[in-house]
Length: 269
Image (cartoon, rainbow, N blue to C red; front, side):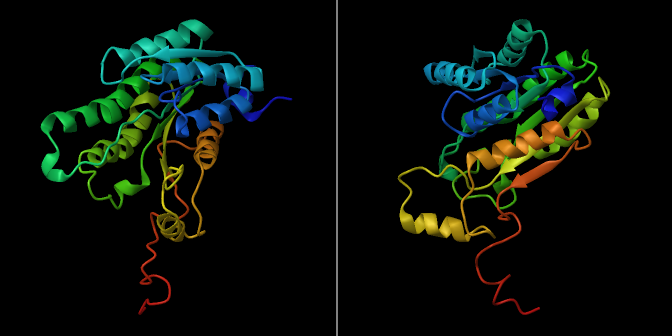
């Protein structure tokens, strides 16, 4: 049975490269979703190399797809082109790039250094840009083009405390997505660029019950999302060839809702 991604890219097994998909986070769920949809996979890791290989082996066995692992730190400007070239050499094509790799760590604003700011931009922003450009140069020669999906963050709309270095690097992803959609369509009008902005998903096991309840209450549905919700959204923008330049929150409504009573119950009209 031909699935939708096979139809979109007019091949038996589209090829997807997912950065930051070695560790057990959202990137791995995206890789699993695309494998389930019949894609051959290129798993990228920087430090989680053994986990990346285990992921590649597991998905190959479970979904009967071909897999490969590429390695490199995205703050090295040579790495994005290298991993894209390795993916292309391995499979002879590249249909999907998901820019999932990112770094984040709470830091008090007075402790943020210029070097820390630069590293956030090097990995989260410039790394995303360079991967997208390298992928587009491969996709440009393909009749069916390709789909690039950047992962942003819903909370660029309402930033958390102690992430003053992280949020500027992620806020740039929205504008970059729209810009790249225009730029890369000039290489091939079948190249599309979109962004998924996850909300509260993948809570750590050590999150206290009270905090978990508060996080649940922060969404309109009263629940925390899953990495699979994000992965499904990635698949959607890959499948729908008329969605381009979109930044889609997958956050249970958290972007538009605050559980402070002022929108529901205490609003004065």
